[in-house]
Image (cartoon, rainbow, N blue to C red):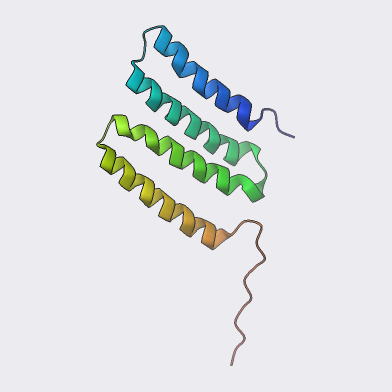
Length: 111
């Protein structure tokens, strides 16, 4: 049983940075980065702690990709794209190895 859904958490992760923008704590650029970071972290936490094991890897991987988009404020955009590509390759490798929900691979017959 889930205590909170993915959508409710994502709404909060979007509204909190915009409230901080209205209070003058964040500027518009940092607000966008905060939305990406908080949304990605929420999807990661949701995938790890609240979602069933079969879909956990997908939510966690997606959360990592979204959270990495927030690095565009700190580093050059091309490096952010490079990190995104590395994360996509890593996520593809992890999913190919663990393959959640897939039947186990047959063992080769000796001979």
